[in-house]
Length: 181
Image (cartoon, rainbow, N blue to C red; front, side, top):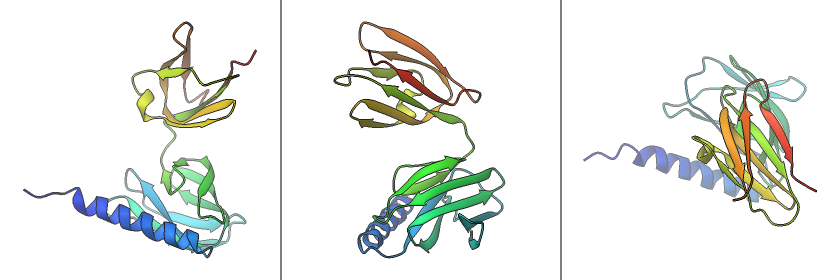
């Protein structure tokens, strides 16, 4: 029996290890960029628009950009522009435009998702329910919880007593609920 998932998983693990090692050294490092479908031409630019490299994706939808110095960059594709920052510790952050990140990999995708930020007092006691709520990437900090890469649709935020329905749509893709008293 062939294990088709083994090679892509091994390549992704190897890329993550290389990225972590390069980031730990405090030097320029590559950034793994992933797409879900083929893009004909993707350009990596410095923030000022100076070209850095043209990205070519492998059959798994991945390309290594760089190595890059810490700073702010743009990726220009047929879908538009995606801006991102590369921190000195190697983390990919502050993505704007047609993409998102998990901190390690920059994912380029058309916007079919948004962000929900919940501001609260005390302990986090809320749950987000909905058909695709499990696809969100939650980030819990004191006083706020941010659900990024949340697919558009209807959701319910609940604490067991109160249910708050909300619609995340292209017209209203970045929402903030303030539950503080």
